[in-house]
Image (cartoon, rainbow, N blue to C red; front, side):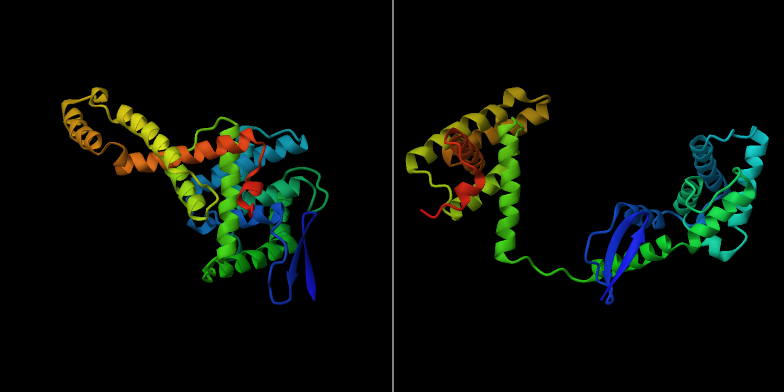
Length: 283
């Protein structure tokens, strides 16, 4: 058995047990976000006034009514602020909800009105608080909060692989678009692809990659790039270790793997193959 929740023209399906079947609608998420804003009770009067000023100004512009003179407009804001602080039910409402109530009221969602007067605005706020929209959003908010508290199951090996392939597709798209790939991430993906035997480089290819990587790392670590004496001293010591280890330095090997992923991408592009074709090849 299903309950249909209507949120400003959007449908949200919920089971009797409270399980959300479809994702929250845009209108629903607007309310859920509004619930997170500070409550009227917790706000100083000047912040309430600023929010009312903004919401009412937009309402006047939206409806085409002439905004009153500064003194009258200020009196309207003071009246509404007093109204919101008059009862606990209003004090417990978040400030962004008041903005939504005024916006929806000026849209005519709570009936016709002759002008933006204290009576019409307080009527919009009352109508909003009693609306099915708000009640439904509260139900969904509670469900989302309960779901977030429950421990999420560990992804299965297949789910982990599927997520890996999704990201790999994006990296390949970035490569084709000329967007640089961070060496650390490229190294990680190379390792996984090599362990999975998707990438198979022979010894000569591996040595060529390490040679290229050594040239890159040596250029980046050159002490001539130092901007201070202390930095130059540190870079000189690291450069000596790098030079001594050459192509077997851990930094070089890591960079070689990153370059290996780029080489693999080059091959895919040259032969017109996709990521899915490459990772799903069985022979």
